[in-house]
Image (cartoon, rainbow, N blue to C red; front, side, top):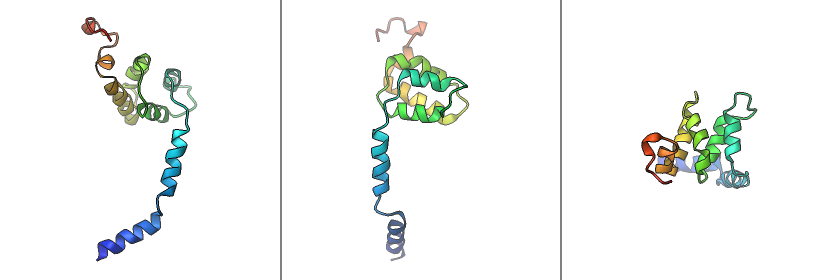
Length: 109
């Protein structure tokens, strides 16, 4: 019985979740992150958080022209930025692994 009371208290404290839907709608309205945004985020003088940019990028379909920026982000000091860059490269599959590498010259991607 305590579990049911706890759940009810939690739902009344958190609410119906309408605020979560509002946050999701606001995120959908954000413009897509471009390769230029990724490159700008990698510069030390960038005025925005690298993680925020890379997190938004890893939630969209990555493009092959972003591979150099994503590979550079793998050396970032913040682990969450590295994780987002790795996730984007994984989405690209073989293109993300072989882009510009001499060992993959036979790959046409």
